[in-house]
Image (cartoon, rainbow, N blue to C red; front, top):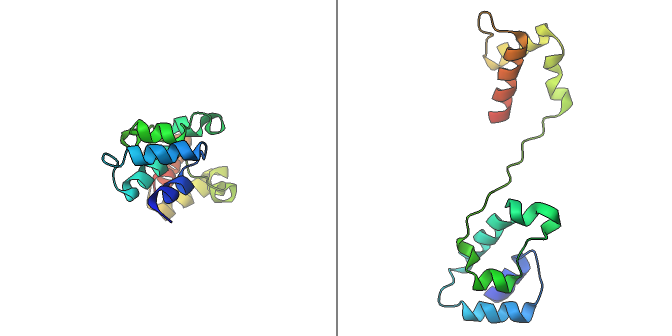
Length: 128
């Protein structure tokens, strides 16, 4: 497979292939290496613009190439990890919360409400 075909397969909106191939040739002298192009496409795939409304705002590949969009900066969607309900059973009682905190090495602070303590433990789970 030539580099254009590799790009074509990686690009999520495969429309107007002949025009995209023409843009590929036109951008030969300014376009970065194929690995950089593929990385830029993967980054763009995670962007808010490309993901909203079912990908409605993904540009045609020819426009993306001619616009040197490999240099674009993207606002990336960061998905929060899903923690299964069973793993959160420690929140059902104060005793279970304290036991869970002890297992993590996180003690309740003097005067701290149980709600604040649970919140601190949840933050620890989210970031670890």
